[in-house]
Length: 373
Ligand SMILES: Cc1cc2nc3c(=O)[nH]c(=O)nc-3n(C[C@H](O)[C@H](O)[C@H](O)COP(=O)(O)O)c2cc1C
Image (cartoon, rainbow, N blue to C red):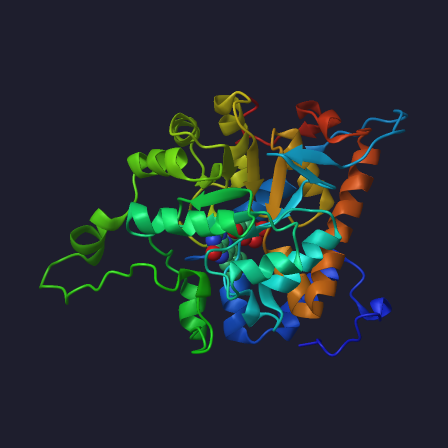
């Protein structure tokens, strides 16, 4: 890895988002790259996230007045300098020794937001002291309501302002690339924030028994659990991993404060539709009741603009921050966010949008397959 840079030597950093991606690919060990950069199965969903965004065309407007414009917004009470949040990602210390704290510092330096993963490798309280911009905490259902609520309460005490309940990965996707590369967590690394959480001990399977349906299914959360958490948690709860408009509707009915359209970056169900394809129908179904965010495949500023044009309030990015952190720690992640924001500004200027509210549906031309609603 190219981590031996002095923090002040910005000229040594990659100059573009694409060069960060290349440098990360080249520098990461094969098994670590498989974990962070690849997806499930034959990676069709991972690829579609990218290809479907790419297939959307932008329709420029010229000679519009851009004075007084900007990329700022307010999201669930948090003031953000731009609409590009850091997506929750597990085990960031595998990429850089400073791990999630480095990412939180980078995000905060850029005036942005971050969702800390429940599977972070550092304690949530410590991460927040390195970057107050990291205001949201992601969690999975923790087997029992009590355990899930205890984790939510801890996040509230640590100063987080919202919870993101991830609902699209009750079981892990089939991650061929990781299996083939022999990826395994090193013994010194674990999801420290989940220490003490219940982990069911499963008896050996009898012949013909299904691990999932016979042993695990009764431990998995349902809509009733989501409604219970929304009612009892001390913080607003967003649902992450929604691809169907009816699930978005059910989420709002259960009390969710926001919907995050996501297919887990292509790491869960290979073959799932791309997030950008799912977005317009979900926005239409939600009818402005709560903010709709989106992640999956955002790699450039123009991608952010496309998602906002299709109704997203903000986007989250995963892999681009993997690239930045892997190549140059906090400085690299911060630089990647700056590049994304700069590119968004250029895209806004060239489509005649002074503010995020000006990024409307008529700025994009959709290919067949993405519903025009
Ligand atoms: C290495 C890695 C780890 C992830 N860990 C989590 C996680 O712990 N919780 C979660 O909700 N999503 C997790 N995700 C999914 C991201 O939050 C996000 O949905 C996805 O990365 C967005 O796609 P992108 O990488 O194309 O931007 C992870 C993604 C990656 C790449």
